[in-house]
Length: 138
Image (cartoon, rainbow, N blue to C red; front, side, top):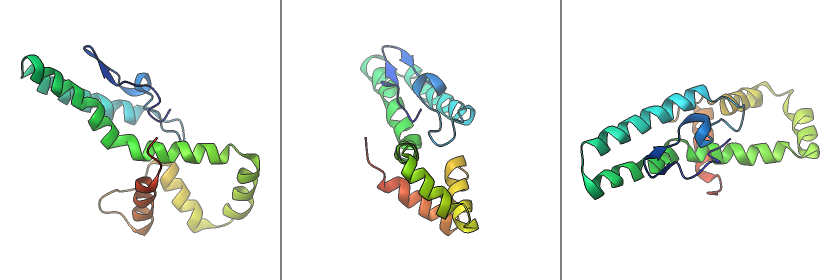
């Protein structure tokens, strides 16, 4: 989960979907991320095939960079979240005080299911985008 399989490109091999650890660390969903990573991989491969030699390799080495740009910050936030709720005391507190708050639960649902709009969203979406930007880098 959470981009835990690396490198995503090496010696003519690209990892996509579950093979590349592209499983949502919040909810275990992976089909959408498999499709997204396959699209990025196919674009990188098409670019590589249009080039020769060193330039071909450069195009393929761009694949992991694009995957990180597309999924990295959200997955890092998910990994942090997973570790937090793995602590029974944190989970008890979050359940006791968080569950009764509808607005907070709407925010959590958007976050966990990846249902936020990173470009034109509402205030909750903007909060999630800000949180992903603040997530640790590794």
